[in-house]
Length: 364
Ligand code: HEC
Ligand SMILES: [Cu+2]
Image (cartoon, rainbow, N blue to C red; front, side, top):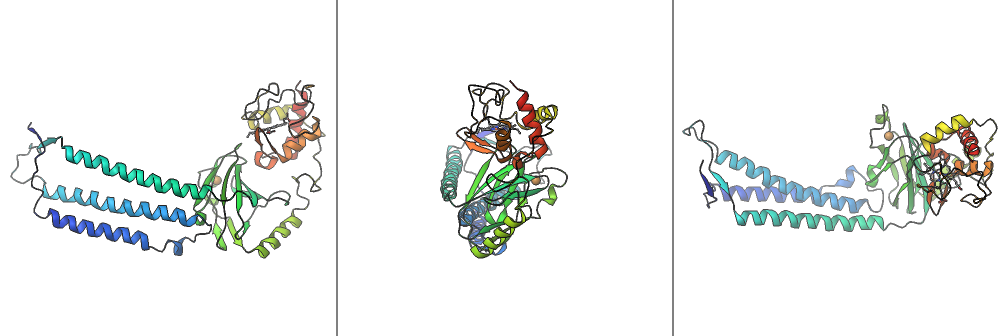
């Protein structure tokens, strides 16, 4: 086998003409991505959607230009340096190694490109993160197979459309009642998974009224494909207020009422400690040990939650009695340790809560 260091071999007669054509095609593809009317096909529903589009255009343009050159030269060399009919059947091409100049440039150019890409992405990510955190706080909870929404001052859950007022900053807290789902509104260009037992948030400000599909992006079970039917409605303040009042009335007596909203307290009669023990192992052990209070996992140890004279009060300052524990299970509580999910995020029925409290009451 003949090996030799690369020689400035002839590139073929048409090489520079071909390079000129590739350059032209690359320029056209770059211009294409910068003039393409993205928003005609996918409206920019929130303030930072356009930043994401800027990143998309940049990546699509540079990606297309690279593609044109790489595939272009691949095809060119395959044709120009193909085996000749006169070559012996077992002939191999000239074996070449080491070309300092080439190796230098094919290292430096991609590195510069990746650095540029990360600078552009980090700047855009920063702008998205800087979105104001105040304003309206809404929860979206993934279920098999729909999303439900909770709003301050609306009892229970909103289960069809999600409404948001124009130009009001929103913090959307995401979690799941069963398996992992993905909350995605393409028109917002924002997406996040909803994970059971975990609350994550995305922040944004709606800027364009309209109706936009919400899509689940994690394969979450047999009816996953049905999770593209719900709509995010962005509308002016008046329409939003009307919708909001409508749900306040509709849900006035919803079973998982928020504290102080006049909802009935959960009946703890007939709590089944054995059923509660099983449920505890399924829904609570990710965050709680059956150990003394100070043995924290995510939340405190719960062994003595109802019978520990060292801890007469619950984390929310209420006395440690069954009714107040039930209230924490129902409404959730966010304190110094983090977020204890509410019954709707944990998927607990009133009977489940009664069973859990009966179980916790047996621990001493
Ligand atoms: C995602 C983690 C998480 C899950 C899941 C979770 N909890 Fe909690 N829980 C917490 C955190 C964190 C706290 C403390 C909140 C604080 O004060 O910061 C807490 C507090 C509590 C308290 C009050 C304890 C006290 O001493 O005041 C009780 C009772 C409780 N959880 C019961 C449960 C039960 C029952 C379940 C299962 C249905 C459960 N939790 C599931 C995180 C969790
Ligand atoms: Cu899903």
